[in-house]
Image (cartoon, rainbow, N blue to C red; front, side, top):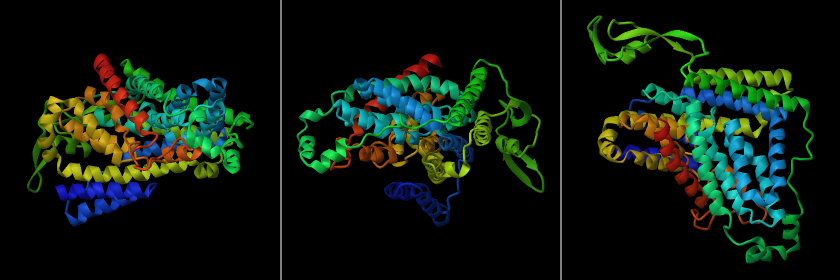
Length: 484
Protein backbone atom coordinates (compact mmCIF):
# COMPACT_ATOMS: atom_id res chain seq x y z
CA UNK A 1 0.00 0.00 0.00
CA UNK A 2 2.83 2.40 0.88
CA UNK A 3 4.85 1.50 -2.21
CA UNK A 4 1.81 2.14 -4.41
CA UNK A 5 1.18 5.49 -2.68
CA UNK A 6 4.77 6.44 -3.45
CA UNK A 7 4.11 5.61 -7.12
CA UNK A 8 1.05 7.90 -7.09
CA UNK A 9 2.98 10.76 -5.45
CA UNK A 10 5.98 10.27 -7.76
CA UNK A 11 3.75 10.40 -10.85
CA UNK A 12 2.18 13.65 -9.61
CA UNK A 13 5.58 15.16 -8.75
CA UNK A 14 7.19 14.28 -12.09
CA UNK A 15 4.11 15.48 -13.96
CA UNK A 16 4.14 18.81 -12.12
CA UNK A 17 7.81 19.30 -13.03
CA UNK A 18 7.07 18.92 -16.73
CA UNK A 19 3.78 20.85 -16.49
CA UNK A 20 0.98 21.27 -19.05
CA UNK A 21 -0.26 17.99 -20.58
CA UNK A 22 2.45 16.01 -18.78
CA UNK A 23 0.57 16.08 -15.47
CA UNK A 24 -2.27 14.01 -16.89
CA UNK A 25 -0.11 11.90 -19.21
CA UNK A 26 2.46 10.87 -16.59
CA UNK A 27 -0.42 10.00 -14.25
CA UNK A 28 -1.19 7.38 -16.91
CA UNK A 29 2.17 5.73 -16.23
CA UNK A 30 1.31 5.56 -12.54
CA UNK A 31 -2.09 4.10 -13.42
CA UNK A 32 -0.46 1.47 -15.65
CA UNK A 33 1.93 0.43 -12.87
CA UNK A 34 -0.91 0.07 -10.36
CA UNK A 35 -3.14 -1.90 -12.74
CA UNK A 36 -0.67 -4.07 -14.67
CA UNK A 37 2.16 -4.18 -12.14
CA UNK A 38 0.22 -4.60 -8.88
CA UNK A 39 -3.10 -5.90 -10.20
CA UNK A 40 -5.29 -3.17 -8.69
CA UNK A 41 -8.80 -2.83 -10.08
CA UNK A 42 -8.92 0.38 -12.18
CA UNK A 43 -11.23 3.11 -10.97
CA UNK A 44 -13.53 5.17 -13.15
CA UNK A 45 -12.37 8.22 -15.12
CA UNK A 46 -14.34 11.37 -14.16
CA UNK A 47 -16.28 11.65 -17.41
CA UNK A 48 -19.08 13.90 -16.10
CA UNK A 49 -16.63 16.57 -14.95
CA UNK A 50 -14.65 16.31 -18.18
CA UNK A 51 -17.78 16.82 -20.31
CA UNK A 52 -18.70 19.94 -18.31
CA UNK A 53 -15.21 21.40 -18.71
CA UNK A 54 -15.31 20.75 -22.46
CA UNK A 55 -18.69 22.48 -22.79
CA UNK A 56 -17.74 25.47 -20.60
CA UNK A 57 -14.31 25.92 -22.19
CA UNK A 58 -15.80 25.69 -25.70
CA UNK A 59 -18.25 28.44 -24.79
CA UNK A 60 -15.53 30.60 -23.21
CA UNK A 61 -13.26 29.96 -26.20
CA UNK A 62 -15.96 31.17 -28.57
CA UNK A 63 -16.40 34.24 -26.38
CA UNK A 64 -12.69 34.95 -26.74
CA UNK A 65 -12.73 34.30 -30.50
CA UNK A 66 -15.63 36.71 -30.99
CA UNK A 67 -13.77 39.52 -29.19
CA UNK A 68 -16.24 39.52 -26.32
CA UNK A 69 -13.55 38.79 -23.75
CA UNK A 70 -11.62 41.86 -24.95
CA UNK A 71 -14.67 43.95 -24.10
CA UNK A 72 -14.86 42.44 -20.60
CA UNK A 73 -11.13 43.10 -20.06
CA UNK A 74 -11.58 46.64 -21.36
CA UNK A 75 -14.37 47.34 -18.86
CA UNK A 76 -12.17 46.01 -16.05
CA UNK A 77 -9.24 48.15 -17.20
CA UNK A 78 -11.36 51.32 -17.22
CA UNK A 79 -12.33 50.71 -13.61
CA UNK A 80 -8.74 50.02 -12.56
CA UNK A 81 -7.34 53.11 -14.29
CA UNK A 82 -10.07 55.26 -12.79
CA UNK A 83 -8.85 54.37 -9.25
CA UNK A 84 -5.11 53.59 -9.60
CA UNK A 85 -4.38 54.31 -5.94
CA UNK A 86 -6.68 51.39 -4.95
CA UNK A 87 -5.10 48.92 -7.36
CA UNK A 88 -4.05 46.49 -4.58
CA UNK A 89 -7.72 45.96 -3.66
CA UNK A 90 -9.39 46.41 -7.07
CA UNK A 91 -6.99 44.18 -9.06
CA UNK A 92 -7.88 40.96 -7.19
CA UNK A 93 -11.58 41.82 -7.39
CA UNK A 94 -11.41 42.14 -11.19
CA UNK A 95 -9.46 38.90 -11.71
CA UNK A 96 -11.74 37.10 -9.23
CA UNK A 97 -15.00 38.09 -10.93
CA UNK A 98 -13.62 37.39 -14.42
CA UNK A 99 -12.89 33.83 -13.28
CA UNK A 100 -16.32 33.54 -11.63
CA UNK A 101 -18.00 34.57 -14.89
CA UNK A 102 -15.95 32.44 -17.29
CA UNK A 103 -15.17 29.44 -15.07
CA UNK A 104 -11.42 29.39 -15.70
CA UNK A 105 -8.56 31.42 -14.26
CA UNK A 106 -6.76 31.57 -17.60
CA UNK A 107 -8.79 34.56 -18.80
CA UNK A 108 -6.68 36.98 -16.76
CA UNK A 109 -3.46 36.89 -18.81
CA UNK A 110 -4.51 39.97 -20.76
CA UNK A 111 -5.33 41.83 -17.54
CA UNK A 112 -2.10 41.09 -15.65
CA UNK A 113 0.19 43.37 -17.75
CA UNK A 114 -2.38 46.15 -17.29
CA UNK A 115 -2.32 45.72 -13.49
CA UNK A 116 1.48 45.90 -13.54
CA UNK A 117 1.40 49.00 -15.76
CA UNK A 118 -1.11 50.86 -13.57
CA UNK A 119 0.86 50.10 -10.39
CA UNK A 120 4.13 51.17 -12.02
CA UNK A 121 2.70 54.48 -13.31
CA UNK A 122 1.30 55.21 -9.84
CA UNK A 123 4.63 54.38 -8.15
CA UNK A 124 3.11 51.38 -6.32
CA UNK A 125 5.25 48.26 -5.95
CA UNK A 126 3.66 45.90 -8.54
CA UNK A 127 4.26 42.86 -6.34
CA UNK A 128 1.46 44.11 -4.05
CA UNK A 129 -1.47 43.94 -6.50
CA UNK A 130 0.05 41.30 -8.79
CA UNK A 131 0.63 38.66 -6.11
CA UNK A 132 -2.90 38.81 -4.73
CA UNK A 133 -4.48 39.24 -8.20
CA UNK A 134 -2.89 36.01 -9.41
CA UNK A 135 -4.21 34.23 -6.30
CA UNK A 136 -7.68 35.74 -6.89
CA UNK A 137 -7.78 34.43 -10.46
CA UNK A 138 -7.62 30.86 -9.10
CA UNK A 139 -9.73 31.39 -5.96
CA UNK A 140 -12.65 32.30 -8.22
CA UNK A 141 -12.87 28.71 -9.50
CA UNK A 142 -14.69 27.50 -6.36
CA UNK A 143 -17.11 30.44 -6.81
CA UNK A 144 -18.13 29.90 -10.44
CA UNK A 145 -21.38 28.02 -11.17
CA UNK A 146 -19.86 26.51 -14.33
CA UNK A 147 -16.43 25.57 -12.93
CA UNK A 148 -15.54 21.89 -12.67
CA UNK A 149 -14.84 22.05 -8.93
CA UNK A 150 -18.33 23.41 -8.14
CA UNK A 151 -20.16 21.08 -10.52
CA UNK A 152 -18.22 18.04 -9.27
CA UNK A 153 -18.92 18.97 -5.65
CA UNK A 154 -22.66 19.20 -6.34
CA UNK A 155 -22.76 15.90 -8.27
CA UNK A 156 -20.66 13.86 -5.81
CA UNK A 157 -22.46 15.35 -2.80
CA UNK A 158 -25.86 14.51 -4.31
CA UNK A 159 -24.85 10.88 -4.79
CA UNK A 160 -23.82 10.80 -1.11
CA UNK A 161 -27.06 12.19 0.27
CA UNK A 162 -26.12 15.90 0.58
CA UNK A 163 -28.27 17.58 -2.05
CA UNK A 164 -26.88 21.02 -2.83
CA UNK A 165 -26.94 22.84 -6.16
CA UNK A 166 -24.39 25.13 -7.79
CA UNK A 167 -26.10 28.31 -6.60
CA UNK A 168 -26.19 27.15 -2.97
CA UNK A 169 -22.49 26.32 -3.16
CA UNK A 170 -21.43 29.72 -4.48
CA UNK A 171 -23.70 31.46 -1.95
CA UNK A 172 -21.21 30.13 0.60
CA UNK A 173 -17.94 30.35 -1.33
CA UNK A 174 -18.29 33.82 -2.92
CA UNK A 175 -18.64 35.83 0.33
CA UNK A 176 -16.09 33.60 2.05
CA UNK A 177 -13.49 33.98 -0.70
CA UNK A 178 -14.09 37.72 -0.96
CA UNK A 179 -13.31 37.98 2.77
CA UNK A 180 -10.14 35.98 2.19
CA UNK A 181 -9.08 38.11 -0.77
CA UNK A 182 -9.64 41.39 1.05
CA UNK A 183 -7.62 40.07 4.00
CA UNK A 184 -4.80 39.10 1.60
CA UNK A 185 -5.00 42.52 -0.11
CA UNK A 186 -4.83 44.28 3.27
CA UNK A 187 -1.72 42.26 4.16
CA UNK A 188 -0.22 43.18 0.76
CA UNK A 189 -1.05 46.90 0.94
CA UNK A 190 2.33 47.95 2.39
CA UNK A 191 4.26 44.84 1.41
CA UNK A 192 7.90 45.39 0.52
CA UNK A 193 9.64 48.70 -0.11
CA UNK A 194 8.08 51.44 -2.22
CA UNK A 195 9.71 51.67 -5.65
CA UNK A 196 11.42 54.98 -4.84
CA UNK A 197 12.99 53.39 -1.73
CA UNK A 198 13.90 50.01 -3.21
CA UNK A 199 17.70 50.01 -3.77
CA UNK A 200 17.60 47.07 -6.21
CA UNK A 201 14.96 48.73 -8.37
CA UNK A 202 16.72 52.10 -8.28
CA UNK A 203 19.98 50.43 -9.32
CA UNK A 204 18.24 48.89 -12.35
CA UNK A 205 16.96 52.32 -13.43
CA UNK A 206 20.51 53.61 -13.79
CA UNK A 207 20.90 51.34 -16.83
CA UNK A 208 19.32 53.20 -19.82
CA UNK A 209 18.25 49.93 -21.44
CA UNK A 210 16.53 48.76 -18.27
CA UNK A 211 14.87 52.14 -17.80
CA UNK A 212 13.49 51.99 -21.35
CA UNK A 213 12.32 48.38 -20.81
CA UNK A 214 10.52 49.28 -17.57
CA UNK A 215 8.97 52.62 -18.50
CA UNK A 216 9.07 52.55 -22.30
CA UNK A 217 5.95 50.46 -22.91
CA UNK A 218 2.36 50.82 -21.75
CA UNK A 219 0.03 47.82 -21.69
CA UNK A 220 -3.59 48.65 -22.48
CA UNK A 221 -6.71 47.34 -24.21
CA UNK A 222 -8.43 50.73 -24.34
CA UNK A 223 -7.26 51.33 -27.90
CA UNK A 224 -9.05 48.19 -29.16
CA UNK A 225 -12.23 48.76 -31.15
CA UNK A 226 -15.00 46.51 -29.85
CA UNK A 227 -17.39 45.35 -32.57
CA UNK A 228 -21.17 44.99 -32.06
CA UNK A 229 -20.83 41.23 -32.63
CA UNK A 230 -18.33 41.01 -29.74
CA UNK A 231 -20.78 42.74 -27.44
CA UNK A 232 -23.54 40.38 -28.59
CA UNK A 233 -21.31 37.45 -27.65
CA UNK A 234 -20.98 38.79 -24.10
CA UNK A 235 -24.77 39.14 -23.87
CA UNK A 236 -25.20 35.54 -25.08
CA UNK A 237 -22.65 34.31 -22.54
CA UNK A 238 -24.24 36.22 -19.66
CA UNK A 239 -27.69 34.98 -20.70
CA UNK A 240 -26.40 31.39 -20.61
CA UNK A 241 -25.07 31.94 -17.09
CA UNK A 242 -28.41 33.50 -16.15
CA UNK A 243 -30.30 30.42 -17.37
CA UNK A 244 -28.10 28.11 -15.29
CA UNK A 245 -28.51 30.28 -12.19
CA UNK A 246 -32.30 30.48 -12.77
CA UNK A 247 -32.67 26.68 -12.85
CA UNK A 248 -30.53 26.40 -9.70
CA UNK A 249 -32.53 29.14 -7.96
CA UNK A 250 -35.88 27.47 -8.71
CA UNK A 251 -34.54 24.11 -7.49
CA UNK A 252 -33.30 25.77 -4.31
CA UNK A 253 -36.84 26.86 -3.43
CA UNK A 254 -38.33 23.45 -4.15
CA UNK A 255 -39.58 24.15 -7.67
CA UNK A 256 -38.59 22.58 -10.96
CA UNK A 257 -38.51 23.98 -14.51
CA UNK A 258 -36.64 20.99 -15.94
CA UNK A 259 -38.12 17.92 -17.67
CA UNK A 260 -38.35 14.78 -15.52
CA UNK A 261 -37.68 11.18 -16.50
CA UNK A 262 -38.23 7.70 -15.08
CA UNK A 263 -35.18 6.63 -13.11
CA UNK A 264 -34.49 3.36 -11.31
CA UNK A 265 -32.94 3.73 -7.85
CA UNK A 266 -32.41 1.69 -4.70
CA UNK A 267 -35.34 1.67 -2.27
CA UNK A 268 -34.59 3.68 0.86
CA UNK A 269 -34.38 1.36 3.82
CA UNK A 270 -34.38 -1.69 1.54
CA UNK A 271 -31.72 -4.43 1.47
CA UNK A 272 -28.27 -3.35 0.28
CA UNK A 273 -27.89 -6.51 -1.82
CA UNK A 274 -29.88 -9.48 -3.06
CA UNK A 275 -29.03 -13.00 -4.23
CA UNK A 276 -30.53 -13.87 -7.62
CA UNK A 277 -30.79 -17.47 -8.82
CA UNK A 278 -29.87 -17.41 -12.50
CA UNK A 279 -27.63 -20.27 -13.60
CA UNK A 280 -26.25 -20.28 -10.06
CA UNK A 281 -26.67 -17.91 -7.16
CA UNK A 282 -25.39 -14.40 -7.98
CA UNK A 283 -25.21 -11.65 -5.36
CA UNK A 284 -25.83 -8.14 -6.64
CA UNK A 285 -26.09 -4.85 -4.79
CA UNK A 286 -29.11 -2.60 -5.07
CA UNK A 287 -26.89 -0.01 -6.76
CA UNK A 288 -25.76 -2.53 -9.40
CA UNK A 289 -29.37 -3.50 -10.12
CA UNK A 290 -30.40 0.16 -10.44
CA UNK A 291 -27.50 0.86 -12.82
CA UNK A 292 -28.51 -2.14 -14.94
CA UNK A 293 -32.12 -0.90 -15.06
CA UNK A 294 -33.53 -3.91 -13.18
CA UNK A 295 -36.59 -3.38 -10.96
CA UNK A 296 -36.81 -5.81 -8.00
CA UNK A 297 -39.67 -5.29 -5.56
CA UNK A 298 -38.43 -3.98 -2.23
CA UNK A 299 -34.90 -3.46 -3.57
CA UNK A 300 -35.18 -1.03 -6.50
CA UNK A 301 -37.99 1.25 -7.68
CA UNK A 302 -38.93 3.61 -10.51
CA UNK A 303 -39.09 7.31 -9.59
CA UNK A 304 -39.38 10.57 -11.53
CA UNK A 305 -36.21 12.65 -11.45
CA UNK A 306 -35.56 16.03 -13.13
CA UNK A 307 -32.74 16.52 -15.62
CA UNK A 308 -29.43 16.66 -13.72
CA UNK A 309 -27.74 20.07 -13.44
CA UNK A 310 -24.48 18.74 -14.89
CA UNK A 311 -26.37 17.97 -18.11
CA UNK A 312 -28.14 21.35 -17.98
CA UNK A 313 -24.79 23.15 -17.87
CA UNK A 314 -23.47 21.13 -20.81
CA UNK A 315 -26.57 21.77 -22.94
CA UNK A 316 -26.71 25.50 -22.16
CA UNK A 317 -22.97 26.12 -22.64
CA UNK A 318 -22.67 24.22 -25.91
CA UNK A 319 -25.81 25.95 -27.23
CA UNK A 320 -24.41 29.36 -26.28
CA UNK A 321 -21.20 28.51 -28.16
CA UNK A 322 -23.27 27.67 -31.24
CA UNK A 323 -25.19 30.96 -31.00
CA UNK A 324 -21.89 32.86 -30.88
CA UNK A 325 -20.77 31.12 -34.07
CA UNK A 326 -24.03 31.89 -35.90
CA UNK A 327 -24.80 35.42 -34.64
CA UNK A 328 -21.53 36.82 -33.23
CA UNK A 329 -18.98 35.95 -35.94
CA UNK A 330 -16.99 33.69 -33.59
CA UNK A 331 -14.60 31.61 -35.70
CA UNK A 332 -14.10 28.04 -34.45
CA UNK A 333 -10.51 27.92 -35.72
CA UNK A 334 -9.70 31.10 -33.82
CA UNK A 335 -11.30 29.67 -30.67
CA UNK A 336 -9.23 26.48 -30.88
CA UNK A 337 -6.06 28.57 -31.25
CA UNK A 338 -6.95 30.79 -28.27
CA UNK A 339 -5.38 30.57 -24.81
CA UNK A 340 -8.67 29.87 -23.03
CA UNK A 341 -9.61 26.81 -25.10
CA UNK A 342 -6.08 25.39 -25.10
CA UNK A 343 -5.60 25.80 -21.35
CA UNK A 344 -9.03 24.27 -20.80
CA UNK A 345 -8.13 21.19 -22.80
CA UNK A 346 -4.91 20.87 -20.81
CA UNK A 347 -7.08 20.90 -17.67
CA UNK A 348 -9.23 18.12 -19.17
CA UNK A 349 -6.20 15.87 -19.69
CA UNK A 350 -4.86 16.69 -16.21
CA UNK A 351 -8.17 15.87 -14.49
CA UNK A 352 -8.58 12.76 -16.66
CA UNK A 353 -5.21 11.29 -15.64
CA UNK A 354 -4.94 12.53 -12.05
CA UNK A 355 -8.49 11.72 -10.95
CA UNK A 356 -8.42 8.27 -12.59
CA UNK A 357 -5.10 7.48 -10.88
CA UNK A 358 -6.36 8.69 -7.49
CA UNK A 359 -9.69 6.88 -7.83
CA UNK A 360 -7.87 3.64 -8.63
CA UNK A 361 -5.61 3.89 -5.58
CA UNK A 362 -8.18 5.09 -3.03
CA UNK A 363 -10.89 2.79 -4.40
CA UNK A 364 -8.75 -0.26 -3.71
CA UNK A 365 -7.75 0.89 -0.22
CA UNK A 366 -10.95 2.57 0.95
CA UNK A 367 -11.32 0.35 4.05
CA UNK A 368 -7.70 0.88 5.07
CA UNK A 369 -8.06 4.65 4.59
CA UNK A 370 -11.19 4.67 6.70
CA UNK A 371 -9.44 2.77 9.50
CA UNK A 372 -6.50 5.19 9.50
CA UNK A 373 -8.41 8.46 9.26
CA UNK A 374 -11.83 7.85 10.79
CA UNK A 375 -10.79 8.58 14.40
CA UNK A 376 -9.11 11.86 13.41
CA UNK A 377 -11.99 13.17 11.27
CA UNK A 378 -14.56 12.14 13.87
CA UNK A 379 -12.77 14.20 16.49
CA UNK A 380 -11.73 17.02 14.15
CA UNK A 381 -13.85 16.88 10.96
CA UNK A 382 -12.42 20.22 9.76
CA UNK A 383 -8.98 18.55 9.49
CA UNK A 384 -10.04 17.19 6.07
CA UNK A 385 -9.28 20.73 4.83
CA UNK A 386 -5.58 20.05 5.45
CA UNK A 387 -5.80 16.88 3.36
CA UNK A 388 -7.50 18.78 0.51
CA UNK A 389 -4.87 21.53 0.66
CA UNK A 390 -1.83 19.27 0.60
CA UNK A 391 -3.26 17.12 -2.20
CA UNK A 392 -3.85 20.34 -4.18
CA UNK A 393 -0.19 21.29 -3.70
CA UNK A 394 0.61 18.22 -5.83
CA UNK A 395 -2.38 18.44 -8.19
CA UNK A 396 -2.66 21.69 -10.16
CA UNK A 397 -6.43 21.45 -10.47
CA UNK A 398 -9.15 22.19 -7.95
CA UNK A 399 -11.63 20.12 -9.95
CA UNK A 400 -9.29 17.12 -9.83
CA UNK A 401 -8.91 17.46 -6.05
CA UNK A 402 -12.70 17.46 -5.60
CA UNK A 403 -13.19 14.46 -7.90
CA UNK A 404 -10.33 12.49 -6.35
CA UNK A 405 -10.80 13.26 -2.64
CA UNK A 406 -14.48 14.07 -2.01
CA UNK A 407 -15.73 10.44 -2.30
CA UNK A 408 -13.08 9.42 0.25
CA UNK A 409 -14.17 12.24 2.57
CA UNK A 410 -17.81 11.13 2.43
CA UNK A 411 -16.81 7.51 3.03
CA UNK A 412 -15.12 8.64 6.25
CA UNK A 413 -18.49 9.86 7.52
CA UNK A 414 -17.77 13.60 7.20
CA UNK A 415 -20.98 15.57 6.71
CA UNK A 416 -21.71 17.50 3.53
CA UNK A 417 -21.99 20.73 5.54
CA UNK A 418 -18.41 20.37 6.79
CA UNK A 419 -17.12 19.53 3.31
CA UNK A 420 -18.91 22.53 1.79
CA UNK A 421 -17.41 24.65 4.55
CA UNK A 422 -13.85 23.59 3.71
CA UNK A 423 -14.28 23.76 -0.08
CA UNK A 424 -11.94 26.80 -0.46
CA UNK A 425 -9.10 24.63 0.88
CA UNK A 426 -8.89 22.73 -2.44
CA UNK A 427 -6.69 25.57 -3.74
CA UNK A 428 -3.13 24.93 -2.64
CA UNK A 429 -1.09 24.84 -5.85
CA UNK A 430 0.23 28.36 -5.27
CA UNK A 431 2.47 26.77 -2.62
CA UNK A 432 4.97 25.61 -5.24
CA UNK A 433 5.05 28.42 -7.85
CA UNK A 434 4.87 26.34 -11.02
CA UNK A 435 1.32 27.22 -12.13
CA UNK A 436 1.04 29.14 -15.45
CA UNK A 437 -0.76 32.17 -14.00
CA UNK A 438 1.94 32.65 -11.34
CA UNK A 439 4.80 32.23 -13.79
CA UNK A 440 3.13 34.59 -16.28
CA UNK A 441 2.60 37.22 -13.56
CA UNK A 442 6.31 37.15 -12.70
CA UNK A 443 7.15 37.70 -16.37
CA UNK A 444 4.62 40.53 -16.79
CA UNK A 445 6.11 42.55 -13.90
CA UNK A 446 8.84 44.56 -15.65
CA UNK A 447 10.09 45.97 -12.32
CA UNK A 448 11.18 42.53 -11.09
CA UNK A 449 9.43 42.92 -7.72
CA UNK A 450 7.13 39.93 -8.28
CA UNK A 451 9.51 37.01 -7.89
CA UNK A 452 10.01 33.30 -7.40
CA UNK A 453 12.56 33.30 -4.58
CA UNK A 454 15.97 31.71 -4.46
CA UNK A 455 14.66 29.01 -2.12
CA UNK A 456 11.54 28.33 -4.26
CA UNK A 457 9.02 28.72 -1.42
CA UNK A 458 9.91 32.36 -0.61
CA UNK A 459 7.92 33.69 -3.55
CA UNK A 460 5.49 36.56 -4.04
CA UNK A 461 2.37 34.37 -3.95
CA UNK A 462 2.97 32.51 -0.69
CA UNK A 463 1.77 35.13 1.81
CA UNK A 464 -1.40 36.23 -0.03
CA UNK A 465 -2.20 32.61 -0.88
CA UNK A 466 -1.94 31.35 2.71
CA UNK A 467 -3.87 34.33 4.11
CA UNK A 468 -6.62 34.06 1.48
CA UNK A 469 -7.16 30.29 1.73
CA UNK A 470 -7.04 30.29 5.55
CA UNK A 471 -9.52 33.16 5.99
CA UNK A 472 -11.78 31.89 3.16
CA UNK A 473 -11.97 28.40 4.66
CA UNK A 474 -12.75 29.68 8.16
CA UNK A 475 -15.48 32.04 6.92
CA UNK A 476 -16.91 29.37 4.59
CA UNK A 477 -16.98 26.84 7.46
CA UNK A 478 -18.93 29.28 9.64
CA UNK A 479 -21.35 30.27 6.84
CA UNK A 480 -22.06 26.65 5.90
CA UNK A 481 -23.01 25.81 9.47
CA UNK A 482 -25.19 28.93 9.81
CA UNK A 483 -27.05 28.41 6.52
CA UNK A 484 -27.30 24.61 6.48
